[in-house]
Image (cartoon, rainbow over all chains, first blue to last red):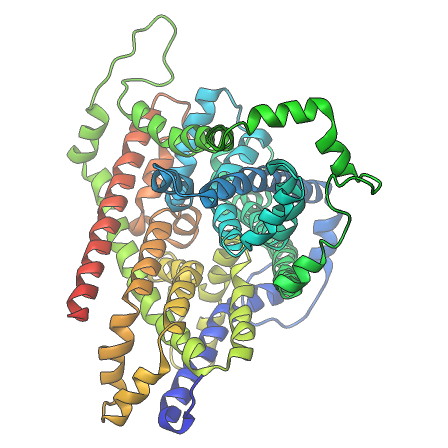
Length: 267
Length: 328
């Protein structure tokens, strides 16, 4: 923040306009997409003259769509559990002390996050076949879990680096062995980070297309279903499905942001 | 922070005599558990090794394994191996790439597109990050940032679809242009490199914005004020102060966005046309068929991965050199 705002007023107004234009740029397409889902016509396009809820009714009377939602959520939850477990463990190792090979382990840890989407999907596809994992739910969960580990590691490491050393020492002095000290001191301290990372993984997995597409079996996840529907043309049903997915992801995101910030304030 | 955390531990000490033992106290005192822990923590070295085994195995088999195995498959003549047939190694799949323009054209197009879109993202988000970090009060910064985060929690496919609706022939942009009387017929935005760029910038903007924001936030305001007092105009201040001092943010943002945008598959399929086929689509083509083309697909994916690595590495080197040059 400027101590002397008078100095930079001109810039401030101009940059403010750019910021709000950017806000419009990121929101308007989504708002238009949501509006289109209420249009009383099969034809996707403007202007919208009359409104209806029929598309929503139609989509959610369809058990196939509902089961796709359930399938995507199940994949997100299971892959997140694996990512959080593995990611926390790796973070604890990396933050424990300096050791030879630490940069190498760290580099390998963040690798899946840096590999471009299509290449990662292909690599997982080939590897899954070698491991004997059939395309389907297990394969998707596995690929999402591996892909999301780096994000957990980064978030948990950041939190671990602020853990006061004195607490661990006090616990050890009082007779706790390393495992108990970890469960009683470190883990509670990490809860905000772990929750934040979990939500992030849930969203990444729920939104992921490319891995789900190449590792999926016959049952589509939500993004794969929307993609398949889009390939055969735009339709208001897609808008209805996409809008519900949008509300879910954005809602969880906002909630998590507020929640983790409140938790961080408390500790 | 420390106060409240210590307060939480005002409970009976672990394993202390006299108090009723807690669950943890009992666990620590339980024979088999104690034996196990003694074995595991006999020396700091052993304790560390036990902590290390699982993560090391995981990153080697799960993170590195798929990439190495992909490279291995790219060098074999057929995959999967038919029973009874000897598998042999070959470079023919790599040769295929260089001898056919159907393959290397999309490859260079992808790299050009990714570089262009990365640059566009940088130009678009820099002023936004600058505004957030320099002209918004601390209290509001998180709020303003959160506002931008909301759309980015929405998935890739949903946001791509939103762009399709925006840019279509009967889309919002064309409707607005026609209502204003600027054009008679709708402009065909869709299925061009423009619509693809629009989609990719839309998808990646946040990955540029966040590194830029954190770099700009660290910039001391006093430097700008000093420069302004000495008569430097807005442009000079930007070029001589903000830009050199945020090179690190620019470099990590660009690297991220470049890597992400080379990897998009669904967005080019949905927003692009026949003249904008990207390498991701070429690679994917080999995997839609049963399996005998997999080595070729693996080879192409390897080529793309190596190219992306080399380019980002060179880019980071360049940025580092720039930064050192400025520091002199």
